[in-house]
Image: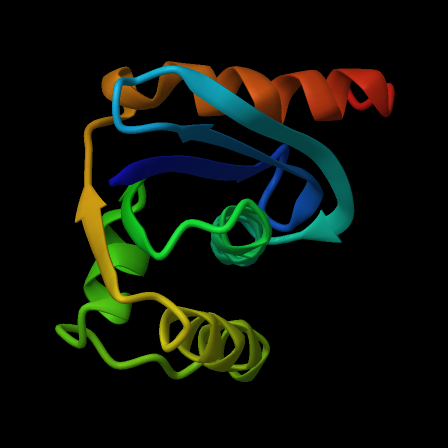
Length: 134
């Protein structure tokens, strides 16, 4: 089973935002990374965008089983049906992710502490720094 670690962040909320994602194979080897500036938006929008782009890349790699790790407890609880989603902009991303998740044989969404997601966070900051966002 592959692992997907994602993070999204905005400098200011809303503010300039970036995403980061790491895809690991079953042995923990990094097989793909995503680091992208996505414009001005909120932290939550960036979190959802990172997951959406990460899942899209995982599918392109031909993987059918994925464990997703996010440091946003809110997003994980929304994806797992524990919290309702009220924001319309986020709802569009949620639906897109729902449609992506149907393409997997097995998929899980797990909350991890920020300290265990440093690599994805680094990719977010690299994207923002590359876009010259202080």
